[in-house]
Image (cartoon, rainbow, N blue to C red; front, side, top):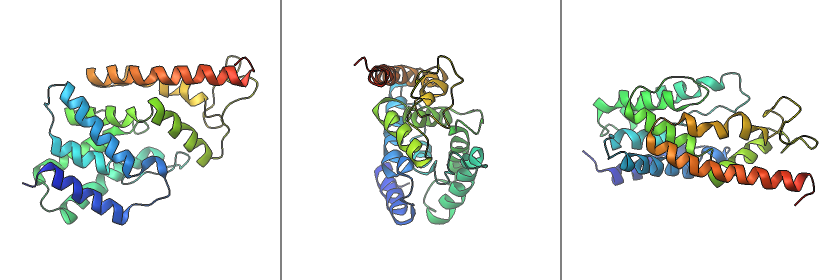
Length: 219
């Protein structure tokens, strides 16, 4: 069986040759960070995961990633899982065939919008690792990058914290913190994931407080 490092280099070479450069939030850097976070979580969980499954799922979980405003957005992970299963069989015949179904499930279940329960340890680790990208400094950058991509506003000028209105992250990026991002630590599937997520979420809270101070002129 090919060792993990050599296999990773094969995956990277394939993605460099085929991946679109249009979405900077789902690029090769994202895949690398998810893989590194999977290993970090797994190490904290006593290394009980199948690293071959986690490696393949990390690099191919966004093989299909429809825009957030696409009507079939919730099916992205299922489509990515189907495409990955075919890819591993046809382009990477040296990948262990008996692990492909586990990779497929991990990819299907990683998505927030798909609502598919993660039933394996590897699926839970991948889900946590991918959602970690929505927190911390990377999470802040991705939130506003996506808002610009979708032509939405950074915040509601008169009520940035949505104290007297219904939060709407389709139109105001800062509302996404309240509606989704700050809820993520409690949704993590692993104990290690929850600890890391809570640390990263603290930066979002601090950032939001500073932004509001600047918006209302009290900085």
